[in-house]
Length: 314
Image (tube, rainbow, N blue to C red; front, side, top):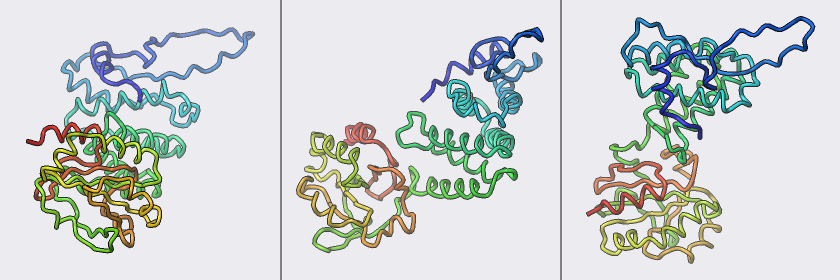
């Protein structure tokens, strides 16, 4: 992940420098000399002096941010200190302009990138990683949904990417914080079935996991040593429901003896969660913390974030 934040102050205060901090200079080359290798930097737009408020200057910058960028030059894909940093700075600017300006700015960007497929997909994948990856420190579901809508609305964007954005947006819009979690049926090792809505508990912690996933197992080991988690389960303040969403039930059964008996251990018979896309299971482990009415308090959070929230439960 590249840096963000300080850029905005420098940009709005100083205007016209490249991301490398170098002013543009004119360089004369004698005909007899060897051609100078192209220097690839990012050139910021020059903000008119008549724009004096930070908001007006930020709006102008996002509208013209990519005016000097060569989307046809695929070499920029392999220069993260230039291209990815430019994207990060652009994404940071989204938090300093009116909400009504965000999607038009994104549509302008993707309209410029659209004729150049490698760069188009590079921008989509990089910005998605920052705003939608569960492990991203700047993850922002609201911004990611705006990104998806903008890609869908840009006429020049190829249909394949529009469909990718549509699929991603629909998943992101499900089970959001404040919404009631989608109900589903789970099956326990005995064959007994129950529904999420049947759990009677002040709090429910949903855990979607893969027993063959190294990260999942490392997280589960950390959970087993959490005194706070054990305390809440013992006092019946919280019910932990661990769900295996895939089809290798024999693998799942073989790992059950390693797991705490106080947890609900179940699998998704028929892989309904996946086939009907009820939850975003693109990465695991995935946690959802729910209240007594099964409203989502935390969505697709990491274990560290979940454990912090557990300490706030009275």
